[in-house]
Structure formats: structure tokens, C-alpha cells
Length: 211
Image (tube, rainbow, N blue to C red; front, side):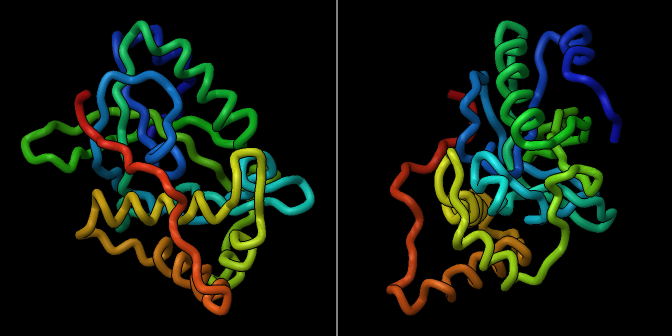
């Protein structure tokens, strides 16, 4: 893993890849040429980061995903290819969304496409670490679920973030058992069981690959 500033990458590349493992898998909101489903090694996805803007507020922060180092783990998501003409706007948007408002920092990782015969790619990823003031850290599945079930921010309910991510994993990575993600989803569903349950928000799933 290498730490680099996005502006340094622009100087060196005519295109770049951005790896998303949270809301970026279903709501990138920036221009890109194509996308690939795949994974990075050495990290596990955890709902340990706080969100005081998109899925919560300062008094009641939401819970969103970050990556935690684990040499035996891998995290699945989507990598987006951004061309030279798209780079500046895409990175400015992501800097506001992920860094300034989200509290994440950028790293370089190796992305492994799911499709056979495709080479490993270098990609930018946004990670929040424990030195961030809104980092919430570990908690039981039930505690995390209780927070997610009651939080809402400028982008909507915290539940939507969780359910859409779980939906992505089932649709595009059905062979992968993401125990942390699915255990929290089950705990949230259990909270709402007496109310008739909850269902994923009505939105067509993204199609990944070349346009």
C-alpha cells in the first residue's frame, strides 16, 4: 500500500482507477469510462467509521464502512476507470465527498478484477482510520445495528447505506460471505421485525462493466 496525493496521480497518469467498497458501489456520482467488480487483498470492511453529514449528524453520527488491515482478508467492491479528461472533476468531487465531508484519506492499492484473464490494476481507495475524530471503532453487531436503525443525514437513512451494500454483494458477489455486513443487516432487520420488517429502497441496481 502506498500513500499518494490525488494531484500527484494526475501528473503521472493518463487514466486512473478508483476503488469503492461502500456507497461508491451503488452511487458513484462522478463521470467514469467503465467499471469492474473485484476485490483488494489485505483489508476487511468494517462499519467502524462515523458519519456526521451523509447518514447522521454531529449529535447522532451514522455508521459507515471503512477498511481495516488484515493480511488474510479481502474486500469486494467496484473499481471505476476515469479518463484524463474526467480526472480533475472526479477527484475534486471525491475530495469533497470522501475527504472533507467524510473524513477519509487516499491510499493506493492493487485491485483484482473478478473477470478471469484481467490483470491486477492500481487503484485509489478512500480509508478512514482510528486517528480521525469521527471514527467510532468496534462495537457488537447489535450496537452497530441499533445506531444504523435510528440515524439519518443529508443523503438519507443510514439503513439505506447498509441495505444497498448488502444488495450489491448478493447480486454481484453471491459466492462471497461477508459475515460482518450480513450480520449487521440481520440485526437491523430483527429490530424492525415487529413493524413488519424493512425492504431495500426502490432503485434499479447498477450495471457494472463497459457502457
